[in-house]
Image 1: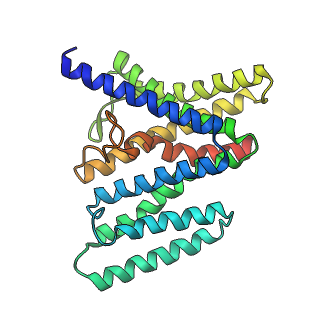
Image 2: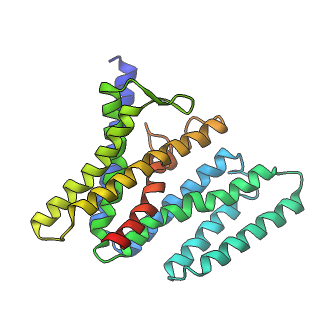
Image 3: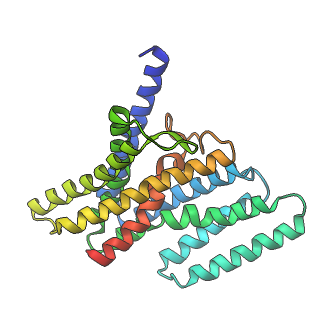
Length: 273
């Protein structure tokens, strides 16, 4: 490995360690309010990054995106899910009014991107906070990351070692069918081992078949989340969503799979566990 590649690897490794430490600290020590602040921060940064894709992050309409995120989290914080529809309608009406008033300064594509970002980023990420609010939520919170990041790591390792058949050659040339299968196995195995430890410690009791089912389904969606984020970047010729996490890119580059896993895991937990 040459010096340049070694340097990039070390930066990426250091960033990964710091990121894992933050997630573990928030999960173990953080109250529901800390979790709200954590997910709110990620959502605001993610909103900025998605607006960057549509080239409106420095425009006069950028504050509207942040206001939408704050309004959405206010509904969640006040336990008023019924108001989310009201926020969505008001947000859309405001976007369209600004579109008309400022026409032709912004394209319809940019305005739709502004609306899309609120749900793709803020609403989906907010499910991490909703998981934390569940009974024993501080334990379930880690299942989201173990599934998503476990799937990523296993997919990468299996694809690197034995991957031969391209899965999505036009969208992600490096992804293989073998890697995808490995990702599903890893995404199911990691939360299974985690819950097995908790069960043996007498902390909580889990049914193994339920955990494997949840992990497997969530791992499939995890890879869909990763590919969806890649598709958006390819459509708009963007390499990374941001530069907040050295060696990884932006929040959406690292949390793209979490965006899909968090809501799926929340509903599976409420139904099965």
